[in-house]
Length: 115
Figure (tube, rainbow, N blue to C red):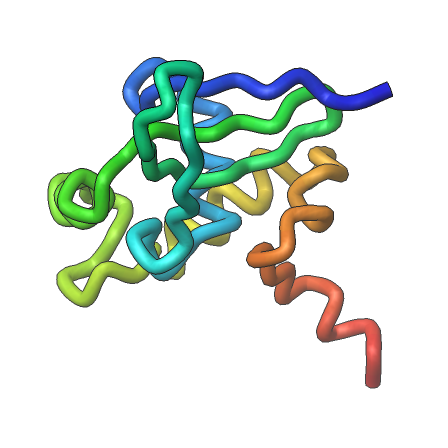
């Protein structure tokens, strides 16, 4: 069974999904945008984010992606997710298995177990 695909805007996502996206893309969104043709054959750019049930295509241009990071207090002046915010979100979403299935997700907590 294939997953439902949802095309939406970042602002319309729940705060939980927004936080999880920040964990998967802690260095910003603009370099991870994909393009596709919508039902009207228009080219659209979006950020891909996959959960257990859905594949979200979060509509945004490069300019919007950069502006989201600049306006978000969770990111520092260089556009990186602040370490304390990252740690807080990792704790809050520790039970979310699908985060590790997203290609860009980097879970530092597993590194400690490899010694």
